[in-house]
Length: 168
Image 1 (cartoon, rainbow, N blue to C red):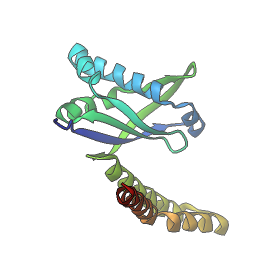
Image 2 (image 1 turned 90 degrees about the vertical axis):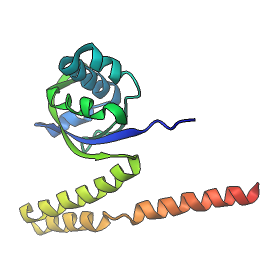
Image 3 (image 1 turned 135 degrees about the vertical axis):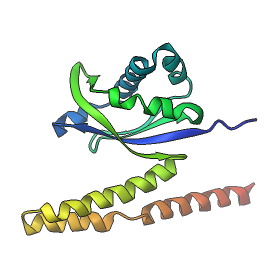
């Protein structure tokens, strides 16, 4: 059996009004990316898009999206992302654009990058805080960003796997 390799694109959906992020859903993003690929690469792009492409993760609060493409043609799909200017969701048109932040081979590497990226963003926000309460909130958020959460989750999963192997 041959393993099919994939690439994961970690993208930010940038909008002018942050309340419109709540309208985002996987199906709408999938359709918007598909339309952009067809616009940029025609029927050939549409055929490649239909093979193994998924929207793996959508965070409607932060606007973070993880798209999965086949490794052999992810650059072709990536090149179509600048053609996205809006997403139709819940009968409303959301004006936006995609900012590709990271390309990874696994979802785990995307998660690790997302933690580091979020921490950097929070550190950039600290000098722009006006009150001491805002600064304390940002500091608390920066301190809570660590890979310890991922490590403990991975260790717990490994312990569960070992327990299952011992039982059989």
